[in-house]
Length: 166
Image (cartoon, rainbow, N blue to C red):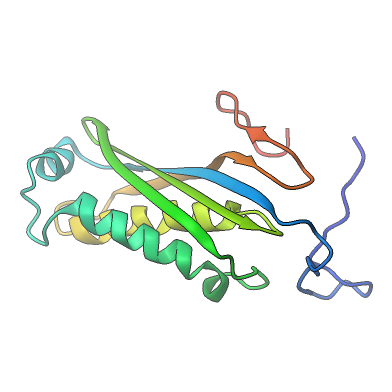
C-alpha cells in the first residue's frame, strides 16, 4: 500500500492549512455516528423524558448543530464551511444504548467530515452532561465517519465494523 502525503504539513513538517483555493466547489455530504453506553435506568429516563435537566434528545440535537457550525473554531486548520444543513438524530436503540447520527451537507471546496464528526461528538457529550447525575460511568464511543461524498476522493461508505486504516 502506498503512503499518502499528509496534507496538513508544509515542506519542513510544520502544521499548515491546506490551500483549497484551486479546488472545485462541489456538493459535499458527510454522515458520522457516536454511541453512548449507559444503564437501562438512564435510557428509560431519556425515553420517558424524565431527565431533570430537560429533553436530552432536543438539547443534544441543538448542541450537535451548533458544534458543526463552530468546527473551524474548534479544530485547528479546518476551513470554515458554508453549511446548507446539519441534522442530528439522538435515539435510544436499546436498554443502555444511545445512538447519535449527524448529517452535514454543503457546497464547498473541501469536505464536511469534521463537521459531522464534531456534531456527533458534541451531541454525545451533551447526553453525558445531562445524564451524569444518574451514571458517571457512561462511555462514549466509537465516534466514526460512516459516509462521505463529494470532492476528488470520491464516495466513502463504512462497511460493517471496518477498522480505520485497514
